[in-house]
Image 1 (cartoon, helix red, strand yellow):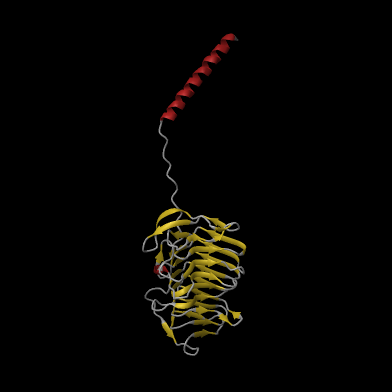
Image 2 (tube, one colour):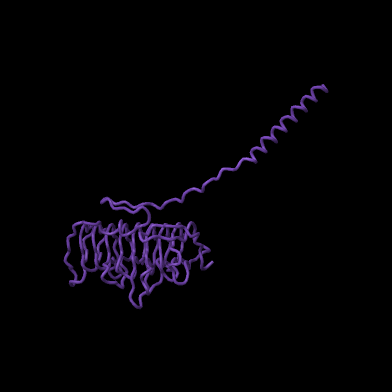
Length: 308
């Protein structure tokens, strides 16, 4: 019995020494360097005509497709605007040399050019419409009215130019995606990329580019502070310019600001003036970009600033 105990003691001593040798060897070996995971790219944009953008929207993948043949529609309202009054009408491949008045439900606008603004308001009434792959505004003028408004519309791959205000939200059910806005301004304007004014329920502003750097009379690329708004979602946008560039507050229901990129030092007073205490705020970043709006570096996280 005693011999057996001595043998067990020698065996245990052997394994203790062996484990110590192995541990020392492991500690002596350099630890491998683990590279951080690559950043998740933003969704690309591709169109049926083959034009595309690898990241955020630019003129290359928004607006009327290059080379498309357009039919000019004569202005039919006092020779200053074109009015649509047929429910379900489709405007495809048209050029309207003035404002477009949508005065019927379920109108579709696509692959077109509208030199003026587009509105669906007719007194106390408004009408549903969709717009895609369309250019709104010209570079020869700077219209003081919002380029597109004001409720119950879906905008996809739209190019807005020649307007001091981009999108107006004055009611329910507005969905804006994959669009590009280049803002201008006139003296006395309060230029905004998107503004809620008597806002409603259900706004989605996703994967858009808003460039306000050349406008002088400004508020913000994203100006959503109306107390009548409810359920506001602002995600994966690239914005630049403004007094305070991202202003989101006062909405009832959910208020989401996620994954947006703000060009560093492009603002006048500060990057953000939002409602931090009740906003779902995450993944927003300060960035630098090149002339083609491609992100060249991540400066750092963009923290929420403003009301607690």
